[in-house]
Image (cartoon, rainbow, N blue to C red; front, side):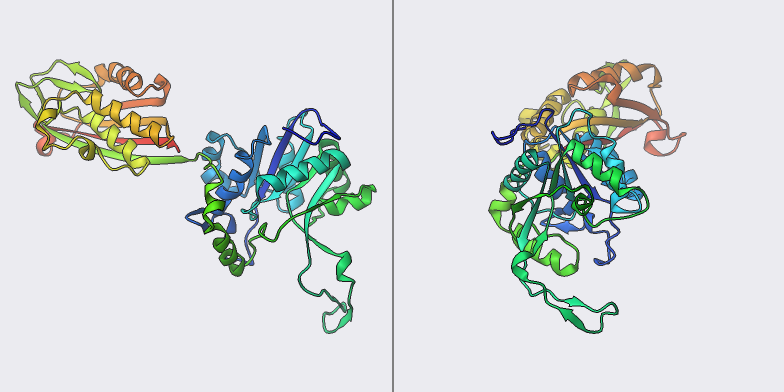
Length: 398
């Protein structure tokens, strides 16, 4: 990470994003509300992962979201931590994952999806100089102090001396550690800089913009959506990879006089699969699942059965084309799970050969491929040995 020439901090920077709020004022869990076609939290995290300023990004999530989305975030390279009952406890849990050698720590609200790299960098640089830095904007409205019961106004503070603070609030590692020690347990703070006053540390002001909005109410979401429709805002961010799933299915009739090919492996049997290609139901179902995971159609789009030049084509060629499409979409396969349904031949002895072949074809680790088979107990065309089916489920990062 690069900081200003005036003060350089060893150890680089790491970021904590707090996304464990209940969204009571929003009426729903705001972090996963859709914004410009994606969950809001994706935009927030992406601003940090794509900035090039951080060696680690840590996301604090509530229990349900941690269970549901945590594995996908981890696979995308984002560390996750359990959110606590309060903001301070969430920060405390996430801070445990900060590397001991980290020099600077940024703390950001998960509901501020419009933060940009220049603001983050400015906050880090100021924190390197002053120990702490907080972004802020001037107040637009007159602010008044009310009586204890809220019935009447008591006074009007001088607006020129007041600023509305935002995040990311950035600190040297030792400063945020001191903040958490001073905060103690059981008490919550709306932001960490409140505790600085106890420590006698004055945070540097970083002038921000009104675009760095915090989405708290339904009206805020409308405003954020309007900002996100700015094509420059959307295009300026490189999408963080998240896990996507795909499902594939294929069936072919078993006939005499055809070789039986499954997963690119020829298996000795009296019948083979009838098809425009070699009829490899395993590779066909896997390819369809992979294409589906990136919303790229199915293999018939790229290898139409009306094209006679493709007659008898090896399904390995279809798999290679599928891999090319995944690469063009910047997608990477995480795992493949395929289930063959056939009455004959018995496929258990061939599991490992098919598994090894599929792993090699799709350039994967053997451990990330699962192949198994089931029978139809004599029921239907499959149970009578007249057809074979394969179902495939895949996960990819895109």
